[in-house]
Length: 257
Image (cartoon, rainbow, N blue to C red; front, side, top):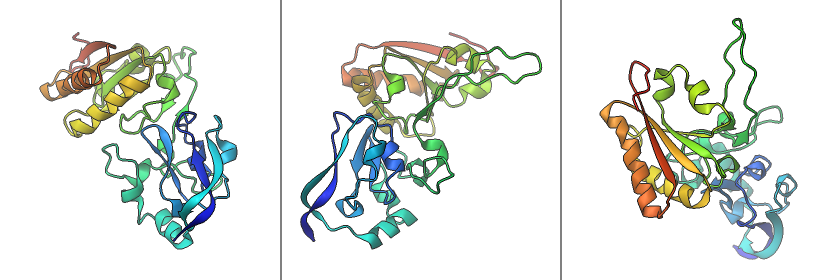
């Protein structure tokens, strides 16, 4: 039943898709959809505004409007996972519960699957000695194309890598050769994943992300070349004039192009 009550309001022009509000919404009323925070259901929002203080851009406010009553029982079912498949963002990952950001307990990293929270990290730059492990050059998380918001700040003005997921296993110096200097990376599989959601996601990225260039890195096997076709479609349909580069890696771990 609808009534006049207080409820969260999201200014999409200010929202940068950081996900901080989602972490601090105990009811799971918010999710990231196409790089923006969205209210899943009016009945999931209690209107108390616990998420507001964590928003770095001021995109969240409380407004008073006609909305469904807050439904505590529905929230319990939602948080237990009964409604996750329906409420999760639709980016081709079939509502996987691990992609929804949430706080499970105070000591845990934010995120239903801790590894899916959007974050930025500083790349380790010191050169390793002979007794040290090679430091990671990864500067952000997540890296899977499905999970990265089109407006992610690490894409802005960047030379972005779109990498077939087998490449880092075949090419031993992947971090040193491709990620050094803080280059953002997106990972996808053109054979096992559905192409259409990737085309749609890349179209939005090419129009919204502000990326400077896109380098495709794929394996020499024929099925892996599908990544280039996905990018070509996205570029044509988006009308983008972004520079596209292509790099092929052999199964034996050599750069062919």
